[in-house]
Length: 189
Image (cartoon, rainbow, N blue to C red):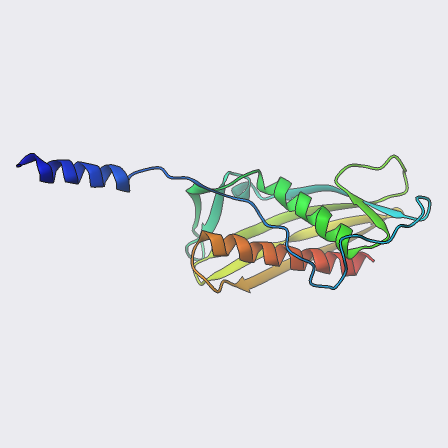
């Protein structure tokens, strides 16, 4: 009978120190612009091509853990809330999907085309994390090369998180990334 509290305490300690890991993947969101995912068929010779060559992330975002900014100078890389696949790959794949949807009549790919006449887009993400004030931040820059001309734009989004938790953070980051993809599409049309 004396051992029951000891066993119960050991059991509770074991449960509270478990390393339960949760994995997250950015969802691909429905179009908000009214375009459909099935764009019209355009003859191959007429289609412009866009190669999303690279989406790079800052070093602190390149790890497996989600990132949370705890004050103006401190960041926490989570140990148990992890990206299911590398963040740069998720961002590139979703960007290709969104741009393909938002730029009808254009072939958008993460692979180079055999044609030399293609636009090339590179994106550098410097912020993609939650913040202590309940916001999600997405920042960086992109460079488009079109007919030998280079265009560079910076982006900086701050979105309010309506719910607490990492699930809500990942969802609002996905919303912000879709919004940024829409802005890129508008500027490179």
